[in-house]
Amino acid sequence: MKNTPHLELTQVGIDFPTPKGPFTALQNVNLKIKKGEFISLIGHSGCGKSTVLNIVAGLYQATTGGVILDSKEVNEPGPERAVVFQNHSLLPWLSAYKNVELAVKQTQKGRSKKEIKEWVEHNLELVHMSHAADKLPAEISGGMKQRVGIARALAMEPKVLLMDEPFGALDALTRAHLQDSVMEIHAELGNTVIMITHDVDEAVLLSDRIVMMTNGPEATIGEILPIELERPRNRIALADDPKYNHYRSEVLKFLYEKQRKVESVSEHKAKKVQDKNTKETDVA
Ligand SMILES: Nc1ncnc2c1ncn2[C@@H]1O[C@H](COP(=O)(O)OP(=O)(O)OP(=O)(O)O)[C@@H](O)[C@H]1O
Ligand SMILES: [Mg+2]
Image (cartoon, rainbow, N blue to C red):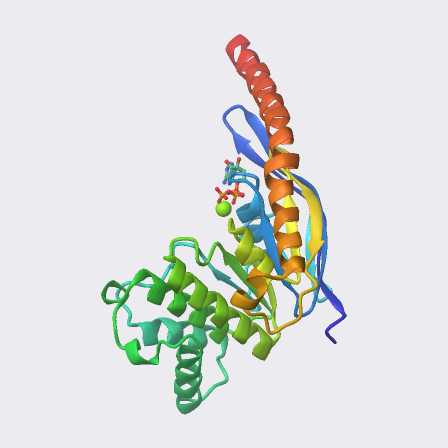
């Protein structure tokens, strides 16, 4: 089961309409993901990572190509694909418990009241948030809100968990703690994860493969780096591991050597397109 390819992006591209004409953010994005794989998407700011995630979530429609999940085309959001946004999008008037419960009620309609309660409690427990179940989002820290967001997504029992820089705004200790929780949960539940990150260590620590994106416009997958480190992984033991450090430097090289060059070329190209469009607009 673990080796069955179940999520496939084929020739995915997207044009956004802009006042200066269509802007091709992504082009020819091809990726096959196995069930239970943990994929990180990494790339410079603005390259199109969130756009890829939003297309898989069904929030954006690809202009070319498409996404297939377990033989079904993705063209709208669905409960089998839960999203954790960077800016922990909890409903502010509901307690942590109620936020999770709402997602459970919306997605698991067959459960009895007792089963719902147990399931909500179980998921809050997974992220170590049971003690603050009755608190409102305004009464808990950013890291705690993020944990509730993760509990809410997990409680939906998604086949695919999509996370857009889930730990981006957190301090280093909270971030490390949550990374460990996510690794444990992933080992336990075995769901497929796509996570966007800017953090090279985070990508190497958590991923089965790191998907590195080229700079936009017309961004695509530049390289894919398989991370063959045994699990469970321990951040302290890995710090001195030559394989870990090799992977780390491969990602750094991609980002700061290979893509830095392309960045200037593509920026130049983008500017040329922009100048051309401006002239055309001016003429019109
Ligand atoms: N709705 C939209 N309309 C027009 N352009 C968009 C839209 N959404 C994204 N873009 C453009 O597409 C490109 C990719 O954006 P995206 O948000 O996917 O980048 P990102 O890699 O997630 O960046 P960051 O790391 O800063 O979050 C950017 O140039 C952005 O301006
Ligand atoms: Mg983004």
